[in-house]
Length: 162
Image (cartoon, rainbow, N blue to C red):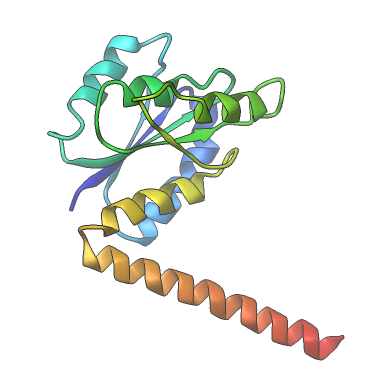
């Protein structure tokens, strides 16, 4: 099974990464978590991203706040899917990171999820993996069925109480 990389621009992004890791663990998908900065360790980012496909990765999740360059830098070094998670650590509570993440130049796309949305980034990576992995597709279907059942149960409980 192919792996998912989670790259944090700073160790302060760890709580966001942990949300993604929890989802990947639930689906039994192998992952690697690293701290690399687009600005402070550009050579390491380039080396990791440019060899990610041959090292068995299916997708890369990049977590960065403020200018949020990490996802774009990674995407410039690989044709693997890159998913950015804008971190809320900046002066604008992550809005600046969100805007930076979604405004990539033509030809170097990245996908972006919501601010601090580690869970959704992992689920998006799993959706990408599920294109070729039927067992992950089945687990995603079951995950969504379970979400639906929880909501219907809550609906019934609240409707009955009120």
